[in-house]
Amino acid sequence: MSQAHIVLDPQGVLQLQGVLDYSTGPLLRQQGQALVRAHNSTELQINCAGVEKSSSVGLALLLAFMRDAQGASKTLTLTQLPEDMRKIAQVCGLTEILGIDVADGADSNG
Image (cartoon, rainbow, N blue to C red; front, top):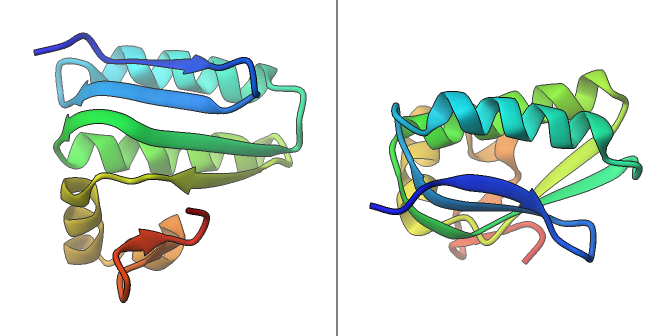
């Protein structure tokens, strides 16, 4: 199991990586909240391509980051959501909130 983390890359994209579960969730929540608040742009993007595995904790984190962005008057979009996260989102009825197009298996931003 890899250690999970969220970092800001040189292009200004938040990169979410690793295994998202109950053991990694609390630290990721703190890291992500700080990065969302500190980010200078009003438009944020979280790339989830580096997520190796996710439980429902991963979706809870994304929703929390979206609330953080909204509270800071910023928009947040998700890209490259892994299939396991898509399936959980679909079962939970979160696809529209997260901006996931389940018809073609791709999110709305790539």
